[in-house]
Every structure is written in structure tokens, then in C-alpha cells.
Amino acid sequence: MNKKLKIVLIIIGIGILIGGGTFLYVFFQPHRDVQATKTDFKLETKQIVDEYLKDATAANEKYLQEEGESKVIEVTGIVSEISDDFNQQKVVLLKGMNENAGVSCTFTSETNKNANSLKVGDKVTIKGVIRSGAGYDEDMELYEDVIMEKCDLVKK
Image 1: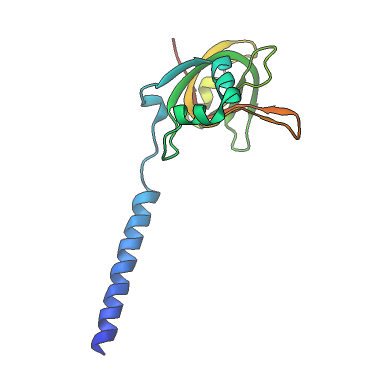
Image 2 (image 1 turned 135 degrees about the vertical axis):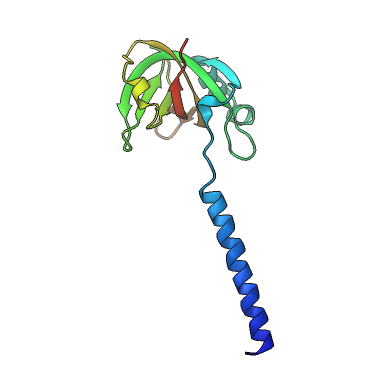
């Protein structure tokens, strides 16, 4: 075999090994255990919604890290609605009676069972991470809720 061809094949093989190893490392990396992580902020539903409606950029700087990982927060509020998403995960909306927006908390398949005992009107504290903040859509004249995921009830 030609010497140049051997070198090219060796370089391609090394590239495939490095690329495959990197892919496997990222793909099988353990997920962040939100419930075992220390809480960064403890807030009432109205507080976090008002922060996002007042200045979304400042709120994102406060609650989101540059890498896109959210700070771990605990939100206390009144259960306004309970539903299931397409993955059969519980979604609990915390929202006051006269509030325009609330906090939508999506539980995980592991924590779903803890949300089964909730009823509309219960005052609860839920721990999770923020994925998006509250906002107001002027075109549709609708308020958008704060979205939290990887949620679970905080036992007091």
C-alpha cells in the first residue's frame, strides 16, 4: 500500500475514534439531579412572574447561567390547575386568583407520584429549574407563564 494512503487512513481512523468517543461521552453523561442540588432562590409565584414581566433580561441574568443551565429555585403558590403533558408527566400551574400569569411546573416520570395528592387550591412549594420566563404577547393579548421543569414537591 502507498505510504501516503496509509497515513491518510490512520488519520481518518483516529478522527473516527475521537469523534465517536466524544459523542458517547456527551450522550451518556449523567443528567443533573435537580432535587439533590442546593436551592439557589426561594420565591413566591407573584415575585418571579413580576420580575420577568418588569425586565425579562435582568431576570434571565439572575436565574439562568451562561451555559443555559438554570438556577435551582423553590416557588410557593396556590395550585390553579393540574394536567398531564404528552409524556404523561404532571403539569401543575401555580397562580393566584387575580394574577395574569403564573408558574407552570412540569414533574418528571420519577416525581409524578408526588403530584398525585395535589388538589386545586392547595398551597405548595415546588422545586425545579426555569426554562423560560413570563411574558406578555401584545399581538395575541395573552400572558405567558414561567415554565419550570424537573420539578418535585418540597416536603416541609
